[in-house]
Image 1 (tube, rainbow, N blue to C red):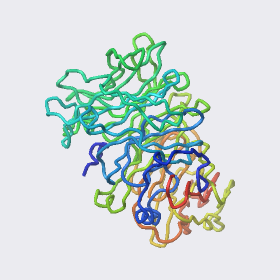
Image 2 (cartoon, rainbow, N blue to C red):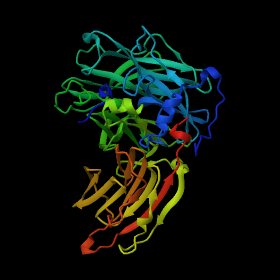
Image 3 (cartoon, rainbow, N blue to C red):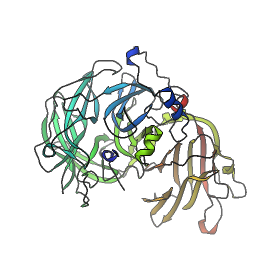
Image 4 (cartoon, helix red, strand yellow):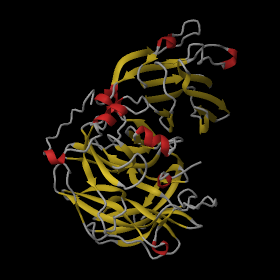
Length: 517
């Protein structure tokens, strides 16, 4: 059943980045016993960013600052389940190899963020790094903006600044810079994003109205401190399904983002268990977004998206890969959640969102397991020889066929599977038993790019459709491509494999012992 992040209450071998930190700024790591346990866990990702221990969720405030990439994320320092939200902090010079830094933001007792520093954004304000984030505090239900069946939080927008060149220390303003509207029908008020418009800052907040639908509320400021309310940037109807959590019903949007991409603007938001993208035009006078195209950002375990610009001006997409197992298993494992790999965004000529894993991920490639670029026959199948160690693999392949199946197996059976079948202009993909219909491109081949990392599998199809999977079975030996002709296709009765391209690499962890630090 779809659920929002609020319902989860129940390198080579080392980064080339180095920062000399005072002793008292060293980040807290897992105990030696826990480190040994986590290092031995084959399901714990080895090249996706995740904390040294415990729970993480939304990416927060990614920013390229003074030649380095900084990313923050929602973090519970005390347990491997949701709660006590802080901003964890990591740094990289390539968006792949990360080093943990001390926690950047923590709740302050009696302040408006006393019960959590929720999601937000980081910007460069004339040379000063500035964070706008949602602070929450428990209040009486009639004053709450977040009433999801578990919590009664009042959400306000808070500000923090840093004069430290490495963004190690932050100074929080005591008073919120934006209070929620006095609207009894308001369904949430969180997760600000920012962009410049003329000489003004424009801030958008995820919100909505009960029995009406989700929206983005806009505010305008000259100095990031005094804000003028404007209007809704965009809104959509709710699903008309009842839920105690307005995000699950589509009555509220979480984690919105809005940016220019090529000649269009793109709006992203999370609601009803999905991340939606829309592309279209921004009216520069009215500051209203007019949607022209839309789709689902990722059909699998992916939520709470956030973007930034990289050093070359590319729009980079981050996302939270949530867990799909109960809290008892998370507590036993000692960790939960990870960050997706960075994806570079673009728009097709038709205005559809396109994405590809950033080229920097090529630095993870180790042994080349299979370079194949011509058609093969079942009696001679070099795919039989592919063997992946440690659940770390990258596969890039193209098929000319309209129907095929690919299965990765170990000694205990299937680990990850993909089937495709074309019906008219719709391509039905089945990944680990879950099926998705996507439009088929007007060409004879389809491209698939898979990154497998422990319990995480990120698949991108035709640079337009993503499916992120979680797999929790304990592995039994290395993975192989199933040898009994799983790629056998039937174009016009033929048994040719119809493979136009197939590359496979063994990937390396980004640090020793499966720790991104």
